[in-house]
Image 1 (cartoon, protein in one colour):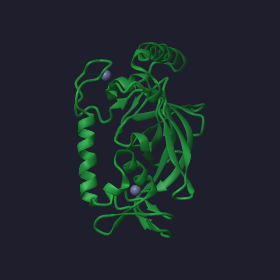
Image 2 (tube, helix red, strand yellow; image 1 turned 135 degrees about the vertical axis):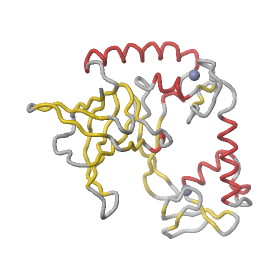
Image 3 (tube, helix red, strand yellow; image 1 turned 180 degrees about the vertical axis):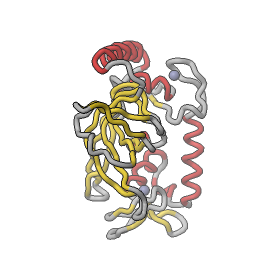
Length: 250
Ligand SMILES: [Zn+2]
Ligand SMILES: [Zn+2]
């Protein structure tokens, strides 16, 4: 443990200030990683591992987590389960089942005060962690009702997205202007390559989604599905898109 900085975390790549924790091989990790590791083994143990060994440990752990079958639908976990979820009663459910109820169980993104870094760090609260398997049946029913209600409200589309904010960014100094449209998918799923539509008085405007930036908790997802916040990356003019807009994909 040492103070000052900035340091680069050898595990997650975060640049941080404050306390650092050393591991074998003269490398150090950030407070967030320290906390994650400490949940699994005492730090005294980790101190004897190299970064490569820690990475191997977590890769194994992820594979173990994905073994077996979903307690809700019975499907055997496979590569399509980019995440598996552990419910309050320790029952594991598949990615597909979790996605089916996200519309009524969105992950709540907030911030926690990190006493090691002396700053607020992103944190999430997943309502699934507070549910028991037997409660999931009624939650699924609520999700289906909510989906029906939203389909009546927005019409039938492949996906519906509500805009929170539009931000300009440049991929590289020499590349074309690009934007990120932040917001949430309220219905369906948006994939890279989808054409989004916004209706203005003068008529519809269209723009293609080049890629999707999901929130940190959902980073492995390449698409944005209902109940999730995220950003749609687009290139070119977006002067016709405003916060509060309803974007549709057909
Ligand atoms: Zn880290
Ligand atoms: Zn399932």
